[in-house]
Length: 143
Image 1: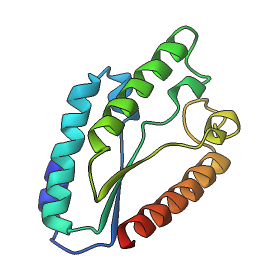
Image 2: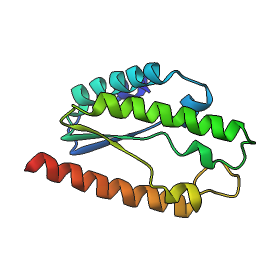
Image 3: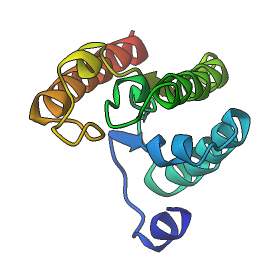
Image 4: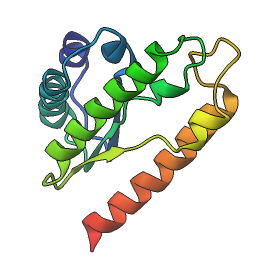
């Protein structure tokens, strides 16, 4: 990801959404290490693309992945939650960076038949929530 960003031409964007983490969760990336990784990506994004707002999308609701057997599903849900709360703590004092949490509806109705990936309804709930999150953050930045 870092190399892809470095190879991309510099530009200016109003909003950049950084959405990654499910594979990091399944690889058991330590939450603090994952936050450091997010910070490295954020620094490069801010430097090259100068967004007015950088939105980190939370690790998806791993506890909803029905393809994972219990207690692995429970464990992965807890691991993802720890990654998210660690990132949220790091972003609490950031002015132009925010965290978008997945709506709870993505866990209850938003899984595809494979039990791992979001369904169309899941993606719809995520993007609708993401749009509202962006609008709220932009309103906060302009007041």
